[in-house]
Image (tube, rainbow, N blue to C red; front, side, top):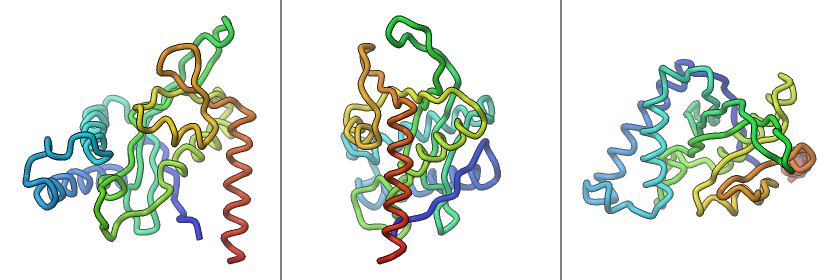
Length: 193
């Protein structure tokens, strides 16, 4: 069955507690798996998680309302990002969109070692939550982001497409609907297994 996540808007206690746990886990994993030196983790998803967690923690107070996250079945923060309304040129027209920044999975979801806290599907669930929120709240229904190269494939799987603007990927309304439909079908078939 698919893992279930709870979508969170803004910074609440579970996000603050979650990020301090992430911080503790990052230190623990660096000691345990990388000889106490974070540089030994270079070029891993875990290393990218460390940088993004720092970015996110630095924005905690200032951009409180921009945070979106998901909490897993253990009550742990599993993925987080920032969103902001902005606009960009699409076919030479200024188009409103919702930009996703600094999306990262938790240290336990990115570490290449088996850890009990690992839960698959957190980032997917976070993007799903953002799409649903944008529709319910009447926010721009095009999502935009600049992925790190190794995440491009993940976003393509959701339906994001690369644009003419270097590095940008966008998820248009119809592609987002297909993605939601696909998740519904996966959930329904999982419950019959």
